[in-house]
Amino acid sequence: MSNLSTFDRFYFLKDSLPLFRKYLGSTFVIKYGGSAMQNDFLKSQVIEDICFLHLLGINLVLVHGGGLFVNDWLRRLSIEPKFIDGVRITDPETMQIVEMVLVGKVNKELVSLFTQHNVFSVGLSGKDGNLIKASSLFSQQNNLTGKVDYIDSKILDLLLSNKCIPVVASVASDLNGKTYNINADTVASAIASSLKADKLILLTDTPGVLRDVNNSSTLIRNLNLDLVKQLQSNKIISGGMIPKIKCCVSALESCVKSVHIIDGRVKHSLLHEILTKDRIGSMIVL
Image (cartoon, rainbow, N blue to C red; front, side, top):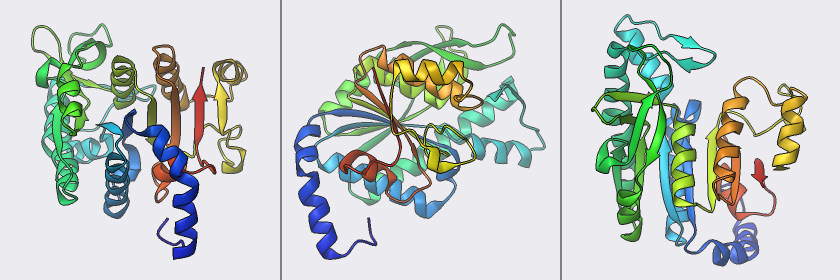
């Protein structure tokens, strides 16, 4: 966006006016994570774009991960990160690091960036305001990788009604107070479903759904559930995209109107996807 001439910017705004009106009062849940969070300049740009959407009168909830930062801190403490099929194995020692990094560091850094733009935001985890009730994803007692059982959106409703952006770390607890590490895509999908959001937006490390994962020009910009099922059966949707698509489908089946998968590493990708006709990611609808 910043490399546009003044003339081009005027026409961008002119063409986007109908979308500005359409989205006024809408609710978007944005999941932010992956390598896009490692680049401070890109991170600042993403927060700026979210602030811009906020100023347009869109209600926004930001859900974040931060697995790469967790891995970095684990290795500093001589703990090797462990995964099974891409899912983190979270033993009690790892859980302490996850909570400290996601809730104590990453979450507060994001809130600080909003503060620099004079945008009211509040950092939360799933523990705050009874937002998320969780349980173990696995049967092993010491594996604290969790799943979402229930969302109580009262605290989100309160913050959104006061023009505040909730910033949610993907950590929660069960009825007994045991803490769990939950996949941020899963949390974002569950929150979007609870709020019946107009959009769930996943800022990822890929351009979207690709027919060929090695060729970004094979991006599929528009999908519905029938096409998603076909791509899954043909193994075109595979690997790390499978759990993301599962979260997308779950949200759509829970009255979320559309889901977008876009590349968070691309400057202003969020605005290009939402506010222009020339979308750059994949949009999935029923």
